[in-house]
Image 1 (cartoon, rainbow, N blue to C red):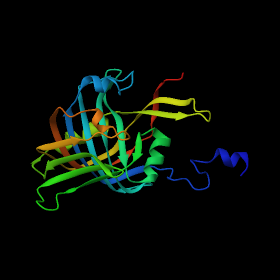
Image 2: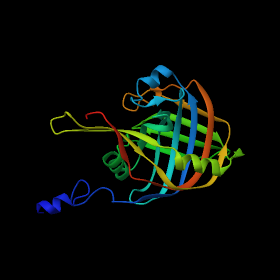
Image 3: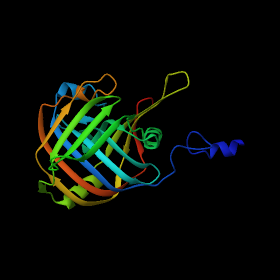
Image 4: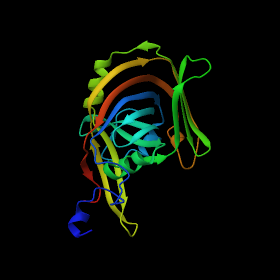
Length: 248
């Protein structure tokens, strides 16, 4: 490879990147979201300035992505915090756990998604068949368990589509230099675009989080369930932009 060839490389390894150049579109992406009230001091310890905490709640998510361009078919689970940036409401992605190397690598390298390898699962209860179940295992231990009544009350799709399409999402992208010192430390904003919501439901729900040293979802403890949402839709991840450089 000459120098010009190296400069044209997209991602590591140069000869065989772990993910494609995109665009990245998701079809039939299925969400189970449990919003819960948590401890404000715990939130302040993990949400980075200049983001501001909008309310002391967390959205715990299970997501099934059966058909995603460039990343394959996989599942994901994690925590999202409602925040404000420059007076605009948005979402801060605090933790993400998934079972596919390609989106872990691509998400971290391109946007800075806080992805770690784990074993999330979202399905309908196999015995009673009357509720959704979300389970996250990190290694051999369970760290999250959620339930929501199956298609309990239908929810309007258009307000949800507008919210998903227009709400900014924020990430903390951190990449060290070769000597271990910080090289990239940025607050990144990215959109979800071309959103179609096919169906949406609300209903009674539960959530349990369990302590783990390497998957500390329980550090944002559950005080009270605020609400739950299940929906299916198509969408794409748009290109990100740096909105704050911590090393500038």
